Image 1: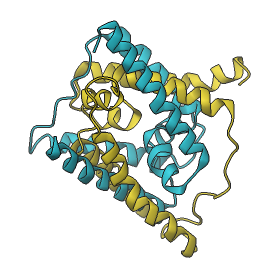
Image 2 (image 1 turned 45 degrees about the vertical axis):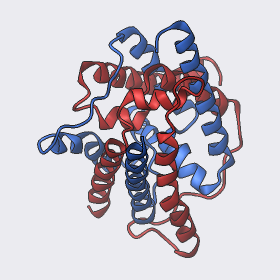
Image 3 (image 1 turned 180 degrees about the vertical axis):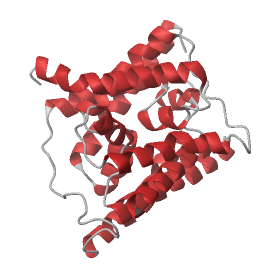
Image 4 (image 1 turned 90 degrees about the vertical axis):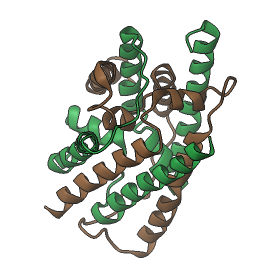
Length: 139
Length: 140
């Protein structure tokens, strides 16, 4: 468990450094849902920059994979559940204008009230959902 | 050109951080949300570890005039708290709890997460494309 916590802090630091670089060098907020969503619904500009970010995010693990085994994602095999969950995450993050990276990391570190509220709500809804799954016997 | 290269590197560092921290493991994320079961606090450490450099970064934006390769920093004026923020966050939280995926890890694990990860990613992308018309129809 302690090992997991240290890796969590270390990996978190890397995420924070990536967000710092994106902000101080490119002047942009590193929000995963905003960068992808703005490209998909064509509401955002800077297409090349977005694409480059997404290529790094999606593609770099494929390079890492050549050198070492990557951890299992342990995703449920219930495709119906995954489709419902994916639709909820896609619609929800775009409606709320941010997800764990945009609101959770970039917004909260700026003491944005919107981001603090959003983070409280999605963690609360997530806890209720997992608790419901547990009562249902699905976790 | 410089901006494109930086975006690529930031994306790569982001996915590496997500993998190193264990956040591409959906069971670990669901474990954090399992407050009344076998709770796993790792996600708090990940978020804390990411917020610390960003606290400093936001302070730098106050003294530095502009980003190195852009005209200005993101605007400091904040939109008001509205029902879209609340409804969207509830919906996101439900999907996050059901799957253990949020957008960053879903993308970071796309190349090694198998068919189930691809199914989630496709549905998420569809949801993102569907959001503007849904918002218009429901007059949100």
